[in-house]
Image (cartoon, rainbow, N blue to C red; front, side, top):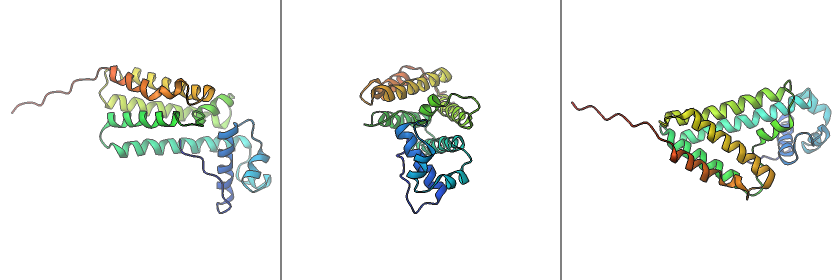
Length: 204
């Protein structure tokens, strides 16, 4: 996940509010942060905040949506780094994810953290969270399929669940705990899985 950008006075109010909310939510959790906290950090007031976001819940939903957009951009960067090479993309995803999880001060996945705090099914952020996690798992499954693994859906589930567990581990015991072994364990998973043999070229 990309580093949180601090709000600056040169930004338009809406962007300052979102930047402030992101910084505070990531650092302290969603429920612990008040609208007054966000308005103060954004160098504005509650009236301006509510002019751009009708409620804190809608601001939370937009915060999660911004996290999802950043994640999609990271997937695109991985594809650009290894065009036409799904296995290379899968390995790079594992490498980059492992680095993030092992970073000092890492607090796991902010979208997963939001899911823990937001359990109401009718919360506007809930559908954003569920769609993001579904898309994330499908990214992994697509790379497993295109890499030629014989049981790509099962492998994708194992990698996805390993990632989710690593995020919780980092959140609960820190970056020096088992979550820091995500790269090692994920690489072992894909190395142990059989892949389909490519058909030999036909002779003329």
